[in-house]
Image 1 (cartoon, one colour):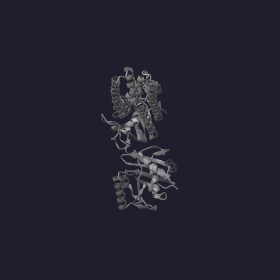
Image 2 (tube, rainbow, N blue to C red):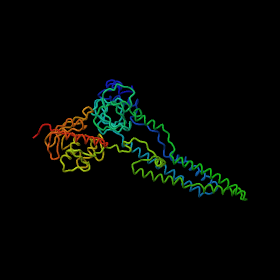
Image 3 (cartoon, rainbow, N blue to C red):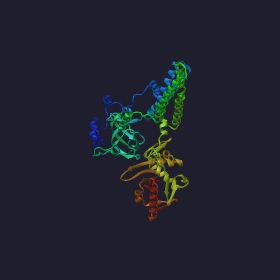
Length: 494
């Protein structure tokens, strides 16, 4: 059974011998032996000594080693020591860089190792995601990273960002119903979630179907492991240069040797002169200069939070002339920001909101209350659109956690693709208000009154509708995503 999206809840649970109560603790050891750990396999790491020896595979380095050997045989020990010292320094620099990059990558893996909330033997518990097993019942919510491939059993407005797998930057709404189709792509499996995806909204109960290298992310990792390392443009250039240089030096030495012999110089002296010429012609410092320059480039990249494992990879980026990419997340930041507000018949720039304006600040407050995103110490959790609403509030000292604590949320109606709206019931200054955000056309059709800048509440007129629709069209034509907000008082509290 692989097409879990086309199977019912009971059928999948029967396949994995599990239930709503989760796996039985007594079965965990047996299952772990069968399935292994929930982690991606990686190639066996090379020891520092092997990495050090690999630094001597470069053709120019081989030429230098030959020159060092000839210098030693000819009795020129000073040249031998200098050449070997330069080669050893180059190899040491390359090895140190490789080891540092390995440690940095390991640190990143440890930082990104998530926890998972599971139900086992009917008890909720938190475990390392590496301990997950097929058949586990997992609970996820906004801000979590999906720890494995899983079938959605219960979805409460669950939305997941699967851009790492599909390239689609928009969050995908997940369902729990059976999809009666076959051979669906990852992006079309709406009742499945996949390892490494980010939950941006809602919560859900899942049943783990695949772990480790059996996940969709694991398949990608397997393909990457099969890819062989290619030589960088710089390595190719240096190798070509080394071949041409070695041929030129050999030809020159042979010519000099025979010319010396022809001039009556003894064969031994002619040979020693030719060898000395060969050693002098080899650029001993070239390797060290290249290594030092690349090491400096690597350190600069590290300051920009880019970890370079191999020194020569730095130069490869400099050889790129054309980059083909999807714009979202590469040419753009994959972040939403509030650009304009439309209140009481006028457009207000998001950077020019007046703090003393009750209608403008009231709109910001409504936007924060009717959303679930948070931004705590720079860590943004939630739907990108809602994060934009929270961030604009921060600019005007409206922190979402404080606002939501002050104006308590009593109830909520999560976003629904049919309603195209989200609503929350909040208590504001002793009164209960239903705050709604959604598609402008839906909100406009439901609106009966309009709030003015002076605080008056008037009946909506045809000219009001026309100006709102015109603003909606103008914003949309500018490439902006448009949201409308509405409020309704529910009863009166004294």
